[in-house]
Image (cartoon, rainbow, N blue to C red; front, side, top):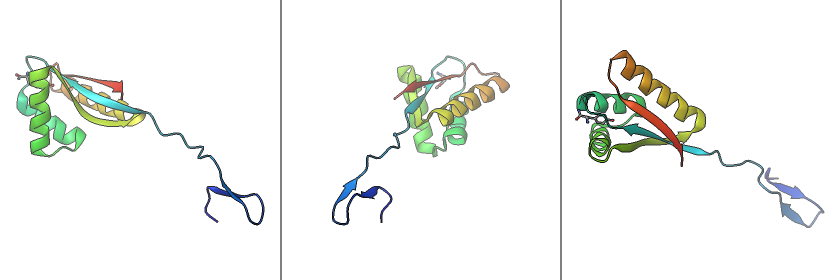
Length: 104
Ligand code: TYC
């Protein structure tokens, strides 16, 4: 019998409430600045967010024009890791690039 059905008599089946909650999702957002080179942002979007060239360029341009842009939506731990990785890479390469996360 399927796991999410409970047999309460030989003839009656009741579907039990699914107990698994949907995980909360978080947007990872890149912030604009005046110093980080555009090519560097594109490279980072490809590496950290697995974006292709076209998507990476579009996201970078959106951030450049509007001040911020969503790079992806992830569960909490994955979003935290992406933010950490972006800031660590940028700091290591001496760019002031900032990245934040927000509940969706
Ligand atoms: N504004 C930067 C420039 O003109 C480019 C840039 C884009 C920087 C996106 C940060 O998140 C960023 N070189």
